[in-house]
Length: 170
Image 1 (cartoon, rainbow, N blue to C red):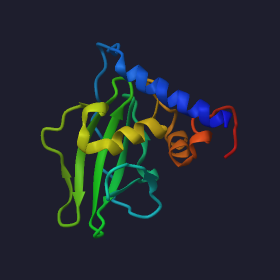
Image 2 (tube, helix red, strand yellow; image 1 turned 180 degrees about the vertical axis):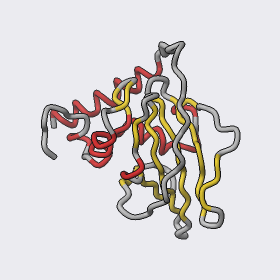
Image 3 (cartoon, rainbow, N blue to C red; image 1 turned 45 degrees about the horizontal axis):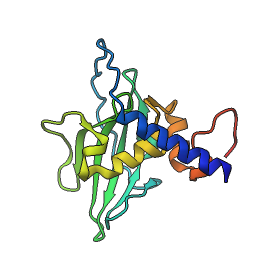
Image 4 (tube, rainbow, N blue to C red; image 1 turned 90 degrees about the horizontal axis):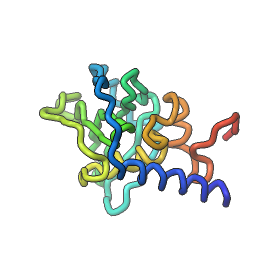
């Protein structure tokens, strides 16, 4: 029970941190995003999104943490009819923003996103899954939640086991 309360408190603190004006590093520059990996639909980490019939999952093999502090990953969205699409995106925890780099659909494969700018996680209604991904493993406050392996571990973990360090075995 204590762990669940701690996990919820950490998530609440992260949300509160995003509500504060961010200290922007004037020297920060986004690095070129690597090309999206091959789309995988097996072994996805489910992402809970209330109020939709779509199913979302993060490909754990696609999660990377760039030297620019951006966590990039592929989300797979599946409709009730079975249509599968992929979204290659990045989250910048320092500013609480998300950016789509490419979209994958069954007919054309990966297509670079046009006019894709950084958008606040909390105001992008069509990508509620991105906010859930950020809250549930990608970000710890205004920083990435460690290396990719730690992020994937926390995305998979139950709420009472998220954001634990110090050799805790799961």
